Each structure stands twice: as C-alpha cells, then as structure tokens.
Amino acid sequence: MPPQEIKTKTISLFAFNLMLAIWLGVFLNIVFYEKIQALTPYTGIKSGLFITASVIVVAATYYFILQIFSWTWTAKPLAIVLVVMGGFASYVVTSLGVLITPDQIQNLMQTDIAEVRDIWSWDLVVWGLGMVVLPTIVILSVTLKSESFLQQIWKKAVSLVLSLLLITGLLFIFYVDFSAIFRENRDLKEMISPQNLIASVASYYKHKAPKQNLALLSYGEDAIMQAKSVSTLPKLMVLVVGETARAESFSLNGYEKETNPKLSKQDILNFSQVSSCGTATAVSVPCMFSGMPRKAYDEQLASHREGLLDIAKRAGYQVTWIDNNSGCKGACDRVEQFKIPESLQQKWCNEGECFDGILIDSLKAYLAALDQKDKQPRLIVLHQIGSHGPAYYRRVPPQFKVFNPTCETNAIQGCTREQLINSYDNSLLYTDHILDVLIKTLKNTTQYQTALWYLSDHGESTGESGMYLHGAPYAIAPTQQTHIPMLMWFSDAWKQHAKKQVQCLAQQAKDELSQDNLFPTILSLLDIKSKIINPKNDMLDTCLNP
Image (cartoon, rainbow, N blue to C red):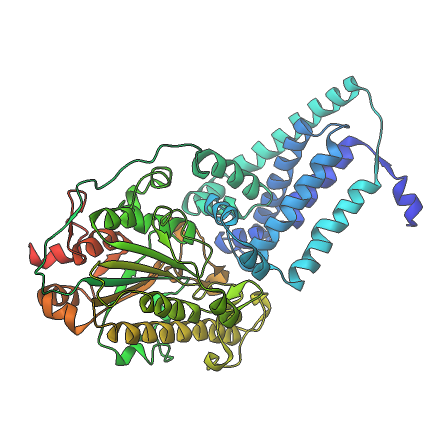
C-alpha cells in the first residue's frame, strides 16, 4: 500500500484497540507461550487448544484494559508508551531469559553509563526497529474514526462484557490447568510484556525506591575494640567484594577447567557451600553489610541505618572503600572512599571501564602512602567489576583470554555455548590472578597482621535452562545465581596471634554458609565486640564458644 494511503487509513477505536491488544498479547510474548506449552501435560490437539486459550486470555485481557483506558484522545499516546515498554521488556525476556521484577528495576535505577553501554548491541537495535519503531510508525500513520462520546460508551460497554465473558469462560474451561501451572510457577507473570514492566516499576516505587530525608539510625553504638598487647601488630583486613562469580565455575570447588591455578597454590581457606543474600548487586551488597540476615532483610531500613563499615569505624578502624564497579549501594557512604589517581585510570581504563588490575595498583598506592610507624588498624574494601555481564570479554586483558574460542560481543545469545562459557571462565581466571597478587602484596606488608576475605555478591546464569545474567527472584533463582565462591587468607603474623580462630574457620570449609556470616564474623576477626553481633551467624563462635 502506498505511503499516502497508509497516512489516510481510517479505523475505529474498537479496531485500533483490538489490533494493539493482539500485538501486545501475542507477538510480544512468544517465549511465555513456549514456557506454558512446556509446562502443560498435553500433547497434540489438546496442547494446541490450551495454548490457543492462553493466547486468547492474554490478548482479551489487554483488550479489556485498553477499552477502559484508551479513548479517541488518549489512544495513540497510550499505544506508543505500551509498544515501547512492551518491546524492550520482551527483548530482555526473549533474548536473555531474564524475568522483569522489581529487583531488576532497582538494578536499572542504580546502574551507570558503562553498564548501560554493555547491554547495547546490534541485536537490540534490530529488535528495536522491528518491535518498537515499526509499530510506532503504524500507530502514527492511522487516523481514528470520529465518534461521539455516547457511541464510544455504548461500544465499550458491549466489548467489555464480551471480552470478560470470553476470559472467564476460557479460565473456567481450563481452570485446573491454569491453576496447577501458575500455582507452581508464580514467576510466569514476570514473562508477560508489558505487564511485567508496568507492575515491576509500580512495585519498585511502592516498596523499594529510597525514601528521602530519612534520619540516619545508629547501630552498634556499643562497639569497642578489645585491647591487645602493645607488642602485637595492628590488623589490616582487605575485604574483596567480587562481582557475578559463581562457585560452580571455580576449580577450587571441583570445576573441570583450571580457573584457579594461582589460588590453588596459596595457603587459603576455601568455603565451597556459600549462598548469596540476593541475585543482584543492588540487593546483595547492602544486605551483606547491613547486619540483617537474608530472610529478615529490610532494604528500606538498611538504606538509612549504620552498617558493618560504620561499626568498624566507630570501634577504631580506619575504613576505606576502593571501587571498580558501579558504587557501594550506600554501604560506604560514611567512610573514606579512595580516589584512584589519574595515572592509574589512564593505565587500566578504556571508555569508562577499568580492568580489576586497577584495584591492585590502588591498594599498593594506598599502602605506600602510609607511615611505616602507623599503628591504626585498617579495613579496606575492594569492589571488583569481576565477571559482570553480558560483556564478559571486556573484563579480561588479552593475556588472560586462555580459554578459546570466546564470545567477543555483548549480544551473548548469539554466541555458541562454548564461546560464552570460555569468556565467562576467562573472567574468573583473571579474578584468580587479581586475588593472587593481592595476597602477595599483603604478604609483603609487614607492619600489620594482614588478611584477605573474598566473596562474590551473587552468581550468574550463562544459558542454563534458557536463563542468562542474574537478578532472578530468589525463590526460583537457579543455583548458578545464588551459589557463590568465598575464600580467606591469613598472614603468618595473623595466624601466630589467632591460631585457634583460623583453625576454627578451616573446620567449616564444607559447611553450608552464606553472606549472613560476613557481618558478625568479620567483626569478631577484627576483635570488635558489640551486643548486635549475632553469635548464630558468627563463624568463630561456632567452635570457640560451643
């Protein structure tokens, strides 16, 4: 049809809303229907009838909603908003297998330019042209037939009744099937676009968005550091917060590929059964520093209450945060944040992203600036970019791309399984190098008792069960997203003065642990006492005070 005819095409509001409902309900949700089909026990004609009923219910529901909110004067703006939201939400679900949840909205709100750039790809551009731009052009091209308000009311009333009867009729006929599937798979609704995005944004602003001007609540005000002999060296603990590393891909935990060749030669304590507090940085990082266990975690409270770093600072530690990620999510707001020198940024960074080697040089620069007679105990947190996806290839310098072939794009769904896994494993190999050099640096820091504690914030899916990246609802998250690596290293000087503590920790190498253990255990390791330390989660209390 010639362009001039498209521009003058006139249709009724009834037809406009029906076509929009079909677009939203059918074409944006193919993966959802595939999932439904996989969960139904039927085959052949019965399966086809059930899937058809599912498609009609979703499309008719969208039509019902449109008939309420879409009028002649609101139809086009509303349609464009829904097409844009639905198109991009569908891309995330279809291409990456990522469910749209309030946690994902939280991740989006806390992301930075570098992370946004990592998601951009030509696949996204092509998808956007076909699923967003083209339907938007069609919407702008049509002319809605002029009808009186009473005519619209009458037609809407009839169509609302008919669509409601269709929806309830099909739900009644297939009630047992829908009930069984959705009762056991509550996350399915997070696959339906654009409903998933709209509901998640609303839930985020209702429950998760930071409240403004909340008073800071003190926590652990009684925290004190136990007095030590004047001949004892002060303690210096380096806490490395990893990014997107999963335990099952660490050769220390039995993975067949050698992803930890250097750490395997260090005298470390490796904990093989550790779970995260969340499946995204925006949840796990503030949670692990909050002092609240995962099941009782309240992110609104955590956002305006003192945490681990505040308590360590109050007890007498110099606390410093060194970041190579998208920030500390509020955990370090009231402690020193090391400004990485421009010279190191030029050495390690490109287009706003830096290799984790910058953390090694930053720690060395920090230590070199200290007075050799310095006696203040120190807690230093290093926040990695680690294995942050989807651009795993950007996290690794060329010399560490040992496993080949690799996936040299952020459109990871277009890579082979072998390429994707190799790229992810290379990022872990680089983390192995980073931790190894940090340990060697601390070995040479002789004016302190030194120690290193590493744990990842969460894990990562790399195509298992069609899922990529992270951020799945915790209740249904695969182990790839919740089972994280954790290890510790202690210098000879530290072990000399705390031999029983190190032995106690070593006994728990294969125990089921979690990020809940970080808060009380690290305070105990730093000789900090407070009534807020929960002995149940304190790894040292387990065997020192049975």
